[in-house]
Length: 191
Image (cartoon, rainbow, N blue to C red):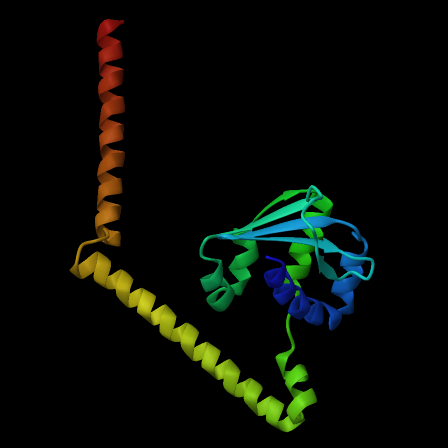
C-alpha cells in the first residue's frame, strides 16, 4: 500500500505546489490525518507543515475520512465536478471543508508542465489536441449512454419510458384521490 500512496502523493503534491492558495489553505491544518477510501483502496495521508500531503502510517485516528463513490474512476474521467459532490466526508468539519474546497478547485496545468519539456508552442498544440480528444471522448460517451437509455426504455423495454412512468404516476395519484374520497364516505356513514 505504501507504493500506491507514494504514487498518488507525488503527482498530487506537484499540482498543489503550483497552486500557492491551496498550499496555504492546507498549511492551516498541518498535522491533520486523513483517510481516502476508493473502492478496495485505502490511503492514509497527513498534511505536513508546508501544506503538502505525505503518506501516513495509518496508526493515527484520521481527522477526516473521504469515501469516494464506487464509480469514481468514471466520474474522474468524465464528470469531475460531480466527483467531490458524490464523496462522503466525515470527521472534522473545518478540515473536511478545506479539503473539499481545495480538491474541487485544484487544476493541473499540464500545458505549463509540458512547456518546460518541449517548449511553449508544441505544448500549446498538444494541449489543444488533448482537449479536443477529451471533448470527443466525453461527447461519444454521452451519445452512447443516451442511445443505450433509449434502447433500454423504448426497444427492449428493460426500462420504463418517460410516458409510461408519467401515466403510471397519474394513475397512482388518481387512485389515492379516489381512496381518500371513499374513506371520507365511510367515515360519514359510520358517524
